[in-house]
Length: 134
Image (cartoon, rainbow, N blue to C red; front, side, top):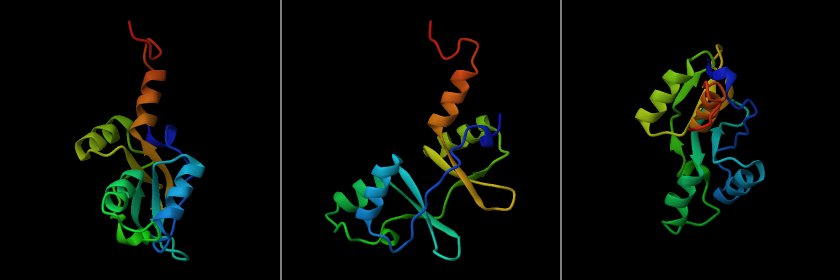
């Protein structure tokens, strides 16, 4: 099975100068724990911010909620391709201790996000027992 079969296709991005509070509100509104950061008007992804980043780098450090995302985001993005095998991607995510990866299409354009949850849920649906334990 390929990443394209399990990934979430609708991805919301944010800009580097957006405030952490705006990002946290957006995460709550769309029920996600990670948002890729994109240069407005250019379309290049420059980083990602997670709910964990907000907790550890803003709340724990006592930074203001108006802090720009660019000051705390994880720069550089671990990614995979739509046609990558989900078992290989799951292994890689485990090795990197990551729960999600940005997915690019053949043209190196953002096409989705895949999470460990997406992969495990699909594997359980396709198991001989339908995800049931005995």
